[in-house]
Image (cartoon, rainbow, N blue to C red; front, side):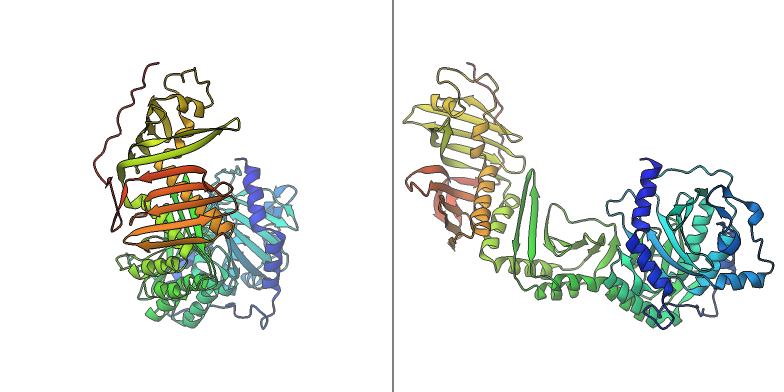
Length: 607
């Protein structure tokens, strides 16, 4: 990636017109205006270890010059003769710095797909003083080469005061400023980046979290703002903090993160989470923060009336939805569990329920928010309240219930073997050819393998077919089979040739076909679906202007009958597939499930 590509991305994320307008609004607000709740001065508890934080200002290295950043010469680089030329005393520096206001925004790693950023609004006055002091004392490194690393994170400081500009610095140390779209030379400020992160981490608890936008989300930001405001007098910087498994992450954005323990003590993380500022607070603060992060689950669930289901099985993707449904029971179920919060955590596996931007695992232990990239886990808890509620919602919709039964059947049965009846009509150059008869099939559902024989006494042919990895080959063939592939009846198919048309007899394709017929004819085209379950056997019927479909499922959802008729000619059977004979209690005679089977070796017959 070129350096300019990265920089343009950072400019687009960090310095868009929308972003600049929002920062201008925050920074120009009067004390009694919309952002009056921002903390202007931090009243610290008596036990603050000031010596620890004095080092940040002393070691901070940024940009210096007249009126805060006059040292940056946009045309020619740094002019050291201009450093603090108009400032004679420390009181002058204090007065000068007090005129500034700074709004903070951070951007996550460029390499991550979300490319998220978060704005923390206006920083407290104490933070501004430390940051501006660091700016005035900055001396750039001699090596101004830019270390190109697409994994870098960035800070954007929108500064308003005696002069106004935007300062951008990333975790590689690349720094430049922007005055009304005119960018300065890039400078090496790697040490400064770490120092600024340490200063900011110290003051983040005192920011106006209500202004937060970006990957944290405004709703969560508002609740966190209330929690921090309610307990701000309790915060005390501490040196001793024992990290353990009880820590819950309550935010993560770019260079910063936050974790909190049930006793209310918390850490603001920075420097790739290798360093942190630790605070003491109360258990009540923890409860409010926890609610602030997890309540968005209920908000997102209650704000919609649709439940989706998605399952990826090999190359097949199944998805359907339950529309206009009441999800309040799901909200209540979620609220009864204790959720751990993980940023950039795992997502549910190949199958999950979807509500709004949430993905809920089928066992109810994982909820992933694709909008905020947050994973919630219910560890070591009984999540049946979640799974039972989801099942009730799906079962409330007759079509969704049937589709779910068909999709889940692949996970409930590993192998199927038994007697088979199969008839198929194939058209070659508008001429109909027929393949059909009785035989035997062995299906390895998990590994997508199948062995099938078909014998037709009327036409005196016998076919023996093997599918491996979704491709069919033949061992023996008959005259009609050659016609189906469009070959001349007097020609033989070359040895080892693929028998692509016979994919219709693959059991996984039978399952997919029935699923698609139900979804397309009922869900999309609004044709009626009739089915009932008796003695474990589900029998159903769908009819449209073009086709009629009959089907039967056993108690596991496996397809044991699948017939397609032409609506124009009700007697024309386009496809017939049948396994075994109906026995009752959800079982079929002549079918074996989950037995130890082996697909025969391919032994292509000689011409």
